[in-house]
Image (tube, rainbow, N blue to C red):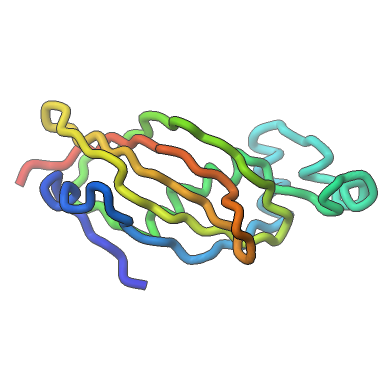
Length: 156
């Protein structure tokens, strides 16, 4: 897959309303789920206890934390686009986040990224990305949201 390279507001502006790209699929493993549970102190059995999930969960398996899937966005976004000439990148916000379906252990997700809007805030680029996480083999998205980042491009 060819990665898009953006190094200025002007280059970014060309993609308003357009799909920037789609990442490769990534498998979410039980080990990742367990490590996320440790990091966030969220040890709910539906995520971390495969035996109990097999017998008591309506999914018959463990599922990834919704916030684990969301936290994969920077990694998957990096597969789609490389930002050069950036001094600093700041996560600014998430709007309209809706988890539409769970990801079972060993499910494979990918990110579909579209540039929703772009604004120049006195030299800081405010980019709103429409993000859709897709689950391999499913028509229903894992989640969709508008994610806002602030890019501080260096002057040329």
